[in-house]
Length: 323
Ligand code: HSE
Image (cartoon, rainbow, N blue to C red; front, top):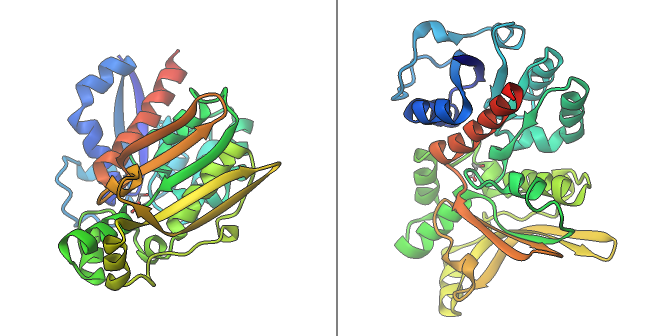
């Protein structure tokens, strides 16, 4: 049986979800890939954390080079989060001939060209489906089956944490703080949840969508962004009285030869499909000039949905290299 050996950088929420996805569906993944996929090394400091997966002590390392320089690793999965050292690690891995998969939207948005160019010049694959929309295969959809289209608009809910907070405040009367704590406990929030609630996480995701759909580099800090921290329970109640909900909406639209983009809390009437997107679910509308309007819907945050997208990328790479 052919082997694909994986090195995992980081075993927090998403690392654990990725490990669990592989463990849970190993036989199926082996059958679908025609190879055995194994996570052989894991870079992680926190060995005490309870993870509910079977990991042997010798799988862990504290030394990045055990993965980045090892001739025994074919694919590196980067799940450290943050721009550095994650970007440097991914570049080193690619320079050493390894394929790279990441869920790290901050690193991809900040260094899109550097990372994609490194993949090209080293003839390796670089995939980041899990960086936008969690388990929703939106990047693959935009860059493969929809490629015959000119995109006119992309619009939707791209952050699970804030959507969870807004839903819990509206439906269960939870305070902002308790709803945020519940989102953190469920593994939806970023290490520093400021990125979620101030909209910076969505800005990273919209920047990546703009790069792929419109071929333009718009740094996340150049996207006009308003998070949910200024919203009050009163705003949410007023929206309910007016027959709608407040959702954190990201959008990019073609205007002549230019594009317009923004991220802001927006009133959505109850009869609009985005009003029915609850808790950690995300939804993304895409309008193409041939296909018309499509809507993608699914869990946008959480260990297993994101682990599903990460492993999907690894399987895609395994199939390509074994062809
Ligand atoms: N913190 C992010 C969210 C994780 O809540 O959507 C998924 O990108």
